[in-house]
Image (cartoon, rainbow, N blue to C red; front, side):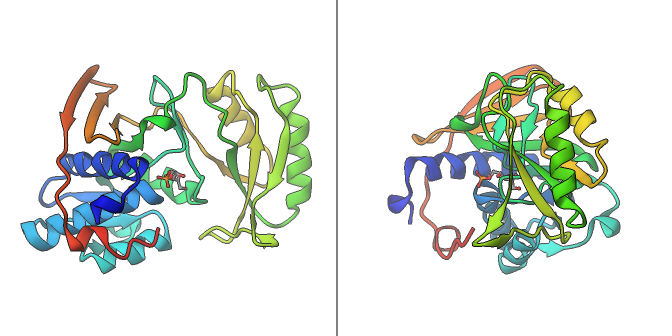
Length: 262
Ligand code: 5RP
């Protein structure tokens, strides 16, 4: 129930609820991964079940696919959809140009493919995700398991020549074994503190053999919906150059506020 939500969860919820306004009947929608995106999937599910909205959803992880089906959204693959009207997803950091760090939940590869194949990407976040310069959140880099230690060493060597403040690279673990992505890969978390030139960084890192993709989303996001714990939301559209403020009332709904596992 809403009374049990922390301010941060309320902020995530209102951002998700407002972002659903970007979705119209008949759209093909990219469904992000993470706790904020899970609220969005639940809000969309409510529109489908109670509002009669017809959409097709392309999930960015098996977790999101399971939740989408559970709340009544028709799930299709990206190859079936071919192109999407809008993708709504969370982020670990966003800057003033709406460049992002993503992948805290380990789904960055599918997330980047899906967002790139969309007319519009909308990020949903609470205000704590806003940064002046990207890099305080460890940058996730997806690597293939074969020779991952060599890939890690090559990344560490490359970091020396890049404009960053830290150089510690760690293998993401799930307990005491490597975390494995939906694509069967590993994640290296790069503790950089500050990424001076994110565009250049992304290009250089992706050149290293063994690297599949990194969590920097440059020029992919079109709008961010920022939620606050008191129900306020702010919608910044980078293309239109607009900032809109709104307020979402919490309406208790058993369908939305129970059994949230993500
Ligand atoms: C998953 C992601 C998430 O969108 C990101 O980690 C934000 O998650 P949350 O909404 O739980 O804070 O990139 O790979």
